[in-house]
Image (cartoon, rainbow, N blue to C red):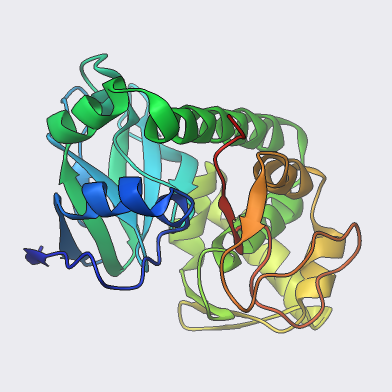
Length: 270
């Protein structure tokens, strides 16, 4: 895990940070470092208080829950739409989750106590982060519903869409076995779901790489959970953050690889 000083003049590619007013954003960036992650890196473990908070940019991190047998299931994932280290921010002690890097890349890192200090001042930083926590909790609740009520194929499509929204690529590095572990299902179920999606022309699977050939097809095959999670961000005073951002639509998403996280959360009006 390599770290380097973060320059405040650089383009902010974490959409949560980008939603802050300029003065507040530069104040936080002046206290951050850029860190590089590889697949499998653990940012923090269960039962420990993370010393840092992270704002991913190109990295994607899974929040995992372990059962008594040591089997881990993904309860949420965080990419450039959010942050990791909510328990540290709120000062509630040990984390109940493990944070494991799913896609290699980089993130902004900040001392947790320093961010909590800024948070406790109130103002735009506190307002935005509280509303982000609400969005994260909504996502976790919807993922729990999805894992309980919907088919493996629908769960897989929801997972694909959420992860496409965090990247600029149509290709995701993921084996059937690893995805089955994240979703808490049998590997054979993922293999069968992938076979049906590939036969329909929606994905191409080769040696641990899933390429989405038709986002429209994946969205049509997904359950409503992806839309619920997407809308919770759109409802929180979202503004476009980049050229590829597009207005919300109730139907398919065309050829753009991005989706619901192609926007930034903006602070509420005072």
